[in-house]
Amino acid sequence: MNFDEFRSLARQAEELARPSLLLREQLGLTESTVARQLREAQERATLASQFLTGIGGPEGIRALSAGVEEWHRQEKLRELIEGPTSSLARAAQGYLASPTMRAAMGYMDSPSVRTARDYLDSDTMRAARGLIESPTMMFAREAAERASALAMPTALAQYRVTATSLTERMSLLEPDRMMRDGVALEAFARGAAMSDALALATRVDRGILDAARVYAATTMPDLGSLAAHRSLLDASGLWLPRFPRVRLLTAAEKRRRFRARLQRNAEPPHVTRAKSLVHEYERVLREIIDAAMAATYGEDWWQERLPKCGCNTLLGRAAARGGDPLDHADYAHYRMIMSDPQHHADVFSVAFDDSAALAQLIDDAGRLRARSHHAGTFTPEDLRDLRVVWRTIEAGLLALTADFDVDLLA
Image 1 (cartoon, rainbow, N blue to C red):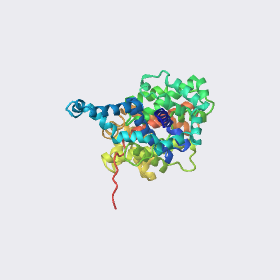
Image 2 (tube, rainbow, N blue to C red; image 1 turned 90 degrees about the vertical axis):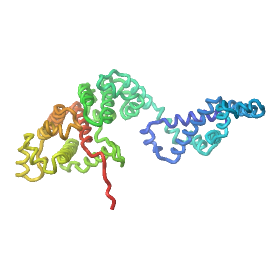
Image 3 (cartoon, rainbow, N blue to C red; image 1 turned 135 degrees about the horizontal axis):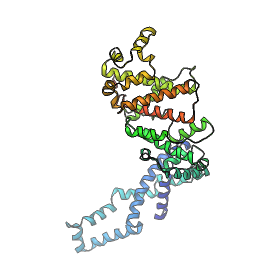
Image 4 (cartoon, helix red, strand yellow; image 1 turned 60 degrees about the horizontal axis):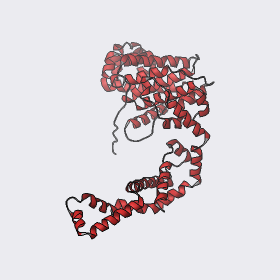
C-alpha cells in the first residue's frame, strides 16, 4: 500500500466513524467485533496519517533519515548532534526509531487496516451508505439546516440544537412535508431546544421557567391528528419518560431510578392510557414530597406540619378512610405543602428557587389534569403543555432525590 492509498483509507475510516448513533443502532453495528476493529483502525490510521502528512509523506521521512545519516558521517555535524544545542536533531532521529513511528508505518498493512478496507466494501456498509444518501436523509439534512437557522427567542436561543443533531430527529418525521410547513418547522426547532434545556437542567431555575414560558407561546401546526402531534413532540425530544439506564449514582442513575419508580406505579388496567402519565407522575410526586418532608421534619412530619400549611383536611380524611394523609391529597394540597414559606425554605428551595413559580407549575398541572380526566376538550397545545409542565416538575423532583447509594455487603 502506498502513502496516497493509506491516506485515502484513513479518510474513509474517519467518514465511516461519523454516522449517528441512531443509524448505527438501526444497523446493529455499535457493539459488533468488526465495528470495534474499525474504530481502532480509524484511530491509529488517523495518527499515522497526520504524522506522515505533516512531515511530507514517505519522501519527507526518507529525506529526514538521509539527513540524519549524513550528519553522523561528518565529524563537525556529529558535535552538533551530540552537543547541548542538538535537541531538535536528536528528537527527529529518535522519533524515526520510536514505537509510535514503527506502529504508524507498520499499521498501514496491519490486519485491522485490512479489515477496515474490507469492511468499507461490505454489504452492510453499502446498505449504510445507501441509507445515509437516501432521499429521506437528504431531505432530513436540508430541513434540519433550515430549522437550525430559524430565529429563536433569547430564552431558548442558548439551547439551540445543531443541524447535525436535528437531522437525526428530523429523520423520524416526514422531512419533505416539514420543509413545506414553516409553522411545523419552527415548532420542531423550538421543541428540540426546550428538550435539551430540560435534559441539561439540574434544578428548576429562572432560565428554565423562562424557556418554558417562551416555548408555551409557540404556535403549534395543524397536523390533523393527535398522533401526528405526538410524533412531532417525540421527534423533537419532548417524550416521556426519557431516562438513560446506567448503574453509577450520577444524574443518569437518578433518572434510571425515577423510571423504575414510574414503572412500579404504573396505572391499573381500568385506568385508560390517556390518564397514565398523570397517574404515574402524581404518585411519584407524593412519594418524593413524603420522603423530602420526612428527611427534614421526621417520619411523623404530617402531624405537625400539615396543620401549619392549611392542610388539616388531609388528617381528617386519613383518620376516616385509612392510609397515609398524602393518599387523599389533590393539587391544591401539593401546592400548599410545597410552596408554604417555611416548607419551601427548609425543603423545596434546593429544587425550585421560586415558591410562587412552583405554585403556578402545580396549578397548571392540575388544570391540565382536569381537562384530560373529565372528558373536556384536550387539544394538541394541551398535550404539549402537559408534557412540558411535568418535565419541568420532574427536573426539580430529581434534585430532591438521593445523590448517593450505599450497598451493604452480606
